[in-house]
Image 1: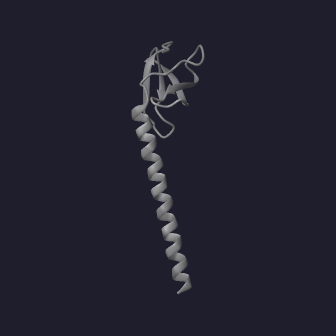
Image 2: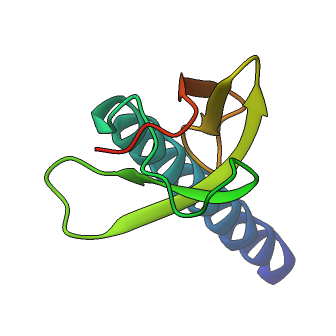
Image 3: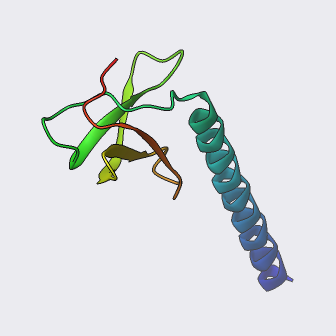
Length: 92
């Protein structure tokens, strides 16, 4: 009986962790939708970190950016493979 209880507890813990991961992912997607679609330039070239000002947030989150066809394309969130592009050199 005790072994069964242990397995049940373990299953509940796993389910809770899964729900937490899903919540984190949903929040990240929400933040991504709230972010502006251009990068704020941090350095003279496009390589390295740029910033996405998060609307309604004092903080700034940095994500990977790369240059493509005269644009700077920045990842919209650390969980996202999507890139938002802006003309290289654009700053708000």
